[in-house]
Length: 592
Image 1 (tube, helix red, strand yellow):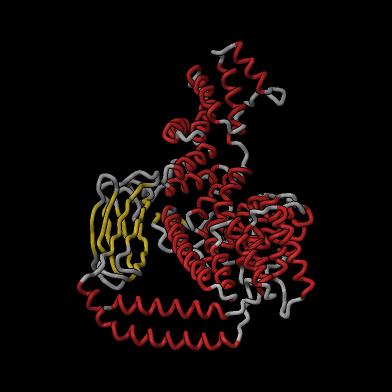
Image 2: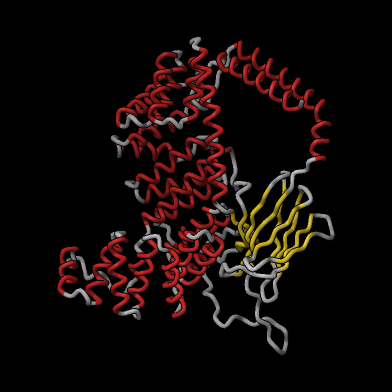
């Protein structure tokens, strides 16, 4: 009965909404809305329907509560306890206590370090893991939905060693290097990304996620080749591939001939070609650590993570180095162990405060939505390397993820000033300008420079047009709107697949009541980029405006279905990325 009421209400609401959408005069751009007198009547009708829905909901609430009581949805909390090296901890005592309750649930981990609870209900909980020889760890949890399932990993650090005579803690035999601006936080575990850990609207959150992925590409594209630290090069600039291949042909069992050509291919990221050569060199001389390090990099680049790890662990047994810890962290992340990875990256920074190590650590934190902590690490890295374009760009991404829009824009503007020819920083600026609630300082000027430097770049014209449009006051200046339209038309002339530009041209045409032209542009936007959900919605409204109700209904249906599918895909992607549980609060030192 309840489902029947809800279905009927949903159908009625959808029908009225679509009727009203047809009456709405979307005469502005994507961030303005004007309404006709008919729209006021529609809104009053929607309000009346909302009141009726509330009354109906109250009438069936008792039935719903009874059904819920008879069929309670279970809450499962499952996880693993790991040591500081990411290894499972067996027989650890795990407690789950609800806030305000003195007693709770207890269990022990199995051989794989796994534990599981069935929580009695929603609310706040404290989960504590204990094991002799390791430090205890308590993590706050919040259960907001019945039927929720949480996946958690808890890391237990080694307990301090006590003096036999006094019981006081002694210092470790080897103290880690004290690096500047020591972070005031610890990554204690991971859990499913049930809350995305960001701020602002879902559009802002999706943009943040996209920028994070682009930031990781900056890491891969801009970082120096790991093997550059090797004490030996491939033999100098005059060592071409032909010369190196000729040298190997003349001495196929020579260690240096194999290593040099293998290193040449490694530096070019030609891992398939590098691997057999470096393996041959390793077979000839397994004690050469530089070659073994290069071999580990080639194996990692080729996707042979477990084999690469064996070589890295062997090298670490001979002595620590920041490069080895960073590579170990990359392997951990590739193998789905982010908890071990972030500790490896932190150790790399402790041993060597290089730009690359700061960047790797901050990127790992940002990827797993430890946003404030990523901001702290990138801030420290930016202080140490103020001329690093990617560090400033990454800090801008982290600040945007925390809804510090103006600060994020300034960092990206600074990055583009450091390297005005770098296209990627302008793309970052354009994306955050599109979703920020207000025009961002400094961005329009930099995007104007982008369009001036790259007149043949479709995105340069598109993002500059959108920045101008966003900064428009009301009433709109027709001369400025003409400039915007010119830039958008230029964008689609350069790249016929620039669906976003077609969409905005259609919105401009619709605002001038050129409905047929708008429909043509919306169709072009969909043809260029079928996943543009908003283009289907705008097209539906335009069809409805000219009385093509069947076409409008089809586009509304496509819009609704695509929106659901995209939301489901985003949720799936988010659940694949574990979110860090962080203890302590980050600090923001004023000076290095």
